Every structure is written in structure tokens, then in C-alpha cells.
Image (cartoon, rainbow, N blue to C red; front, side, top):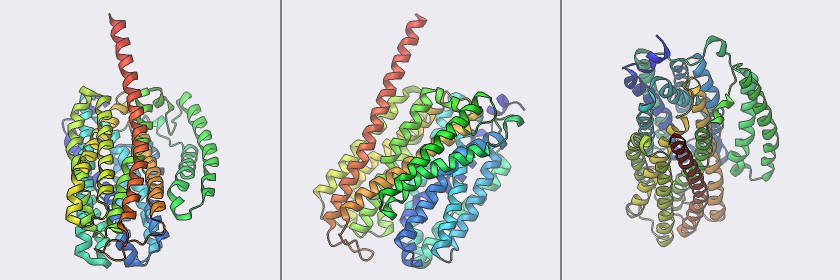
Length: 497
């Protein structure tokens, strides 16, 4: 069957549901790990540095894989790479749950990140290949809905599992939950998902030297950002020098392979599309703020106000609910409104973030969980609505001019930008937060506020300010692109007249 016929497979929506189920398992893990860290530390005796590596190891490994995984999906097939990635992720999740000590947990988390990074590009690549252009916004909306549901249910589910299993076993259940979901998705993908390839046999060879150069580039850039809070030395950023060299060598190699049509890992023709280039830079900057803010909010609630994990999860549920509501709606509207929808989403995020800072500053001594949750519900809901109106439409707009043959690679670039943004945002905004609470004593036990909750309120406010810097930058990029598209439209109308 030809690619054209495959693109209009009447069973594509059922197949997408299966792929999204597997993606849900990976997203669920991301949304609950931070919540489980305090329990892991108390259960295993892990040091703060080891706990940091349980997060950092996953982020670094995940950041290495999307472009490589996307290219492999283009060449070897979406379903095959999806099954390989999900199988590895499930096995690694079980290994984390059975982990005997912190070092084993760190190693298993790294493996989780490597295989988890393979999944996302297969889903976005499948949408590019199997759906006609007019349906892609709706399909990406379903992907956004999955992200929102995972974000909404993950923390609550994690809090319930930790409460159910207790301090010693509850955090293990958080990782075991991935296993049955993943197994079901693997079985259904074998039954319902038809293989989709984008490359010819001649193009199917993986550019191994390019993959090594890309890996070294990403590692050199992300390592100092992710690990600064652990080592606390600016000397880490000297790694950016070899990172720039590796990056330059990678771009030169990929440019040569692109010109020779010799199976590049990253087809640089992608960046000839302004919509794609702007979308990649925009989402990197946006993710710096949108992922850094929830991190410091969770730290504020648990360390400053003494919230239980389940209480902290309930507090941020309004954000995830807002995202789950707006993502599928935005996916349907993006083809009508385009970039203005994304600009509106960033604006909502900014309004919600400013509201949180005002509420926390004016109620700095308020520690009652129920009251705090009610106070934060509306601004967090606005942030969620804004996020749902940003991520899904930006992905649709970024990929609208991309050749579906390299849809997996393009999706991998977007995924890498998101992971890089998340790492930069969490590290930088987290550093701001910790700088403000340095010398202050955190909550000594669950359910007990810190001796000086006002210090944590100041730290959260400073973290919000850091997130706003990134958000206003993203808003500026969105407005510039909006102006560019309007100029292009007017020029096109003038030519046709």
C-alpha cells in the first residue's frame, strides 16, 4: 500500500489511541517522580546529591534521545521504535521499583530516560505520516489532552500510592504502575498499529558519527545546567566550550550530508521553514518558565508549608485540569486562529503566574492546606489553560510545513527543545529559589510548616519572577512571528490581486 493510502487509513484514530496510551505511561512517570523524591530519600537513605541524580540522570538521558529516536523511527518504522522504546521503559520502571539502593535507582532512571526519549517522536511522527493535514491539529490536540490528563492524574495518583504503600513501599508503587499500562499498550500496538516508514532503504542508515557528536553536544550543554545545584561551581559552565565545538562539528556534518542527500541524522532543510525554526526556539524558552514554576511551587508547598505529598498534588491539580481542558480545544482551533492562539496562551500563563506571586506575598504566613489550595486554584487553572493553548498549537504550527517523510526527526527536535527548556528552567529557577531559602530550616516532618514560611514565600515569589522573564521572552517571540505571518499573508494577497 502506498504512503498516500496509508495516510488515510480509517483505523488511524484507534492506532493513535494506543500510541497515546504508551506515551501516557512515560508522562505519568515524569509527573510523579518529583513528588516521590522525599519518600525515596527517607526510605533508602539517599543523599540530596543522589536524589538530584535520580532526576538529573533521567533528564540528561531523555534529552539525548528524541532526535536519534525520531530519525530511527523515520527509517525503521514508527511502530517498531515505539514498541522498543516502551518495552525498555517498562523494564526500567520495574527495575526502579525493585531497586535495592540509590545507585541502582540512578542507573535504572538513566535507562528509563533513554527509552522514554524514543517514544515522543514516534507519536508526533505517526501523526505527521498517518493523518491528512486538516486532521493534524485535532490529532495533536489528543496528544495535548494526554499530556494534561497525565499531569492531572499523575501527582494525585502518586500521592495516593505513597499513602497506600507507606514510606518504605509507596514510592515503589509509583514506578510499578507503569508496568501494566505499558504492557497493555505494547500488546495493542502489535494488534492495531500499522507500521509506517518514511525513508527508503538507501536512507535508512543511521548517521552514527552524527549521533555521537549530537550526544556530546547535548550532554555538554545540559550537564552544567542540570548539575549546578549539586556542585555549586561556575566552572561547570566551561563544558559549554567543548559543547559549542561539538555542536559546530555536528552542524557542519549534517549540512554536508543534507546537501548530498546521504541520510543525515538531522535534515537541516527543516530550518528553511520559518514556522519550524520559530516554533523550536519559542517552545525552548516557554518550557524554561512553564516547568520551572511548578517545581518551585511544589518545593514551597512541601518544604515551606509542610504539605503531605497528596496535599501538594491536589494543590497543583487545577493547573493540570486547565491544560487537559484547553489542549484538545486548542488543537481544533489552531487551524482557524494560528499563532494568535499561542500568544493568548502565553498571556494567560503570565497572568496566572503574577497572580500566584501576589497571593503568596500577601498571605505569606498562611499554612492551612485547604485554604492555600483554594487561594491558588484560579491562577493555577489559568496557567493550565494557557499551557494547553501553547504546547499543542505550537507543535501543529511548527510541523505544518514539514515534509512528513522527516516528521519523526522534526518531532525529535521539538522534543529535545522542550527537554532542554525544562532542564534550564528547573535548574535556573530552582537555583533562585534555593538562594532565597539558604540558611532557613525546611519542614522537619510531614504536615509541619517550616519555622519561617515567609522566607519560602519570598523564595517562591523570586522563582515566579524568573519564570516571568522566560515567559515574556516567549511572548515577544510569538508576537514577532505573528507580525511576520501577517506580513506574509498581506504580501500574498497583494500578489494575487
